[in-house]
Length: 134
Length: 75
Image (cartoon, rainbow over all chains, first blue to last red; front, side, top):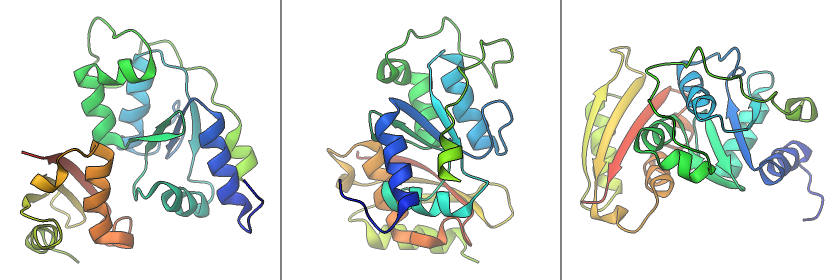
């Protein structure tokens, strides 16, 4: 891919390409800033699925460029192998059906957590993607 | 500010043979939940189905429409 006039968009596209599972959210998995982002990251954490997380709040351009790439207007957005899996609705639905575990290649937990799984293992530290997007 | 009726009409006009049910999720007039059923969704992934609905509203989502939560079905 050639250098474009839009380094931020390139950085986002690269992050999507280079991280097997990446979640763009408001806030962080440890301190989500929106209920939809909280529920989506909780699903991933409940499955013990490793994922990179990018907080889109520090710079409004991140969301603009992300939505331009994905043709998806809302946050959160979950990508796997470079492809948009969906936002909060789809991720929740896939979590409940067991499809999310399958897509992410992890075991389905024995019991579905009601809300944020407080006792679940913390997800691996999010990659420092946001630093490069700043 | 869009009404539930307006959102329903715009979805049903834009997507062939679509039936939409729209509710104001929070009562605040900016968080909506819609269920859309259309044969036009046949063979499309959920992401593609939702993208078809989001495309109707463009930049209004994130603007006047703060959130539009979707359930889509092809049947």
